[in-house]
Image (tube, rainbow, N blue to C red; front, side, top):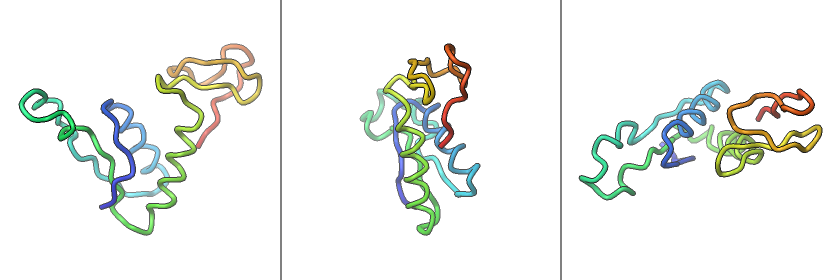
Length: 104
């Protein structure tokens, strides 16, 4: 197993897992239920981590993750590739021109 992504926000780790698995890359999330022991152990020990199971998929996984994360800010918002408008993370289409969010 090779670590390819980690984030304190479990939902973001889950999104990245879904992205990789939709491309046929087998994954595993470590510390999936780590929030239940927060405060009992150091917080760095319970950060949700996404692993790729097969070494041959690591470079492709990193490329997919990099592409997916390149169009988002820290809060998940993204910039429309057509008109340049700032769009909140929960929207899949631009509010200004209607263009779809760029896919990884």
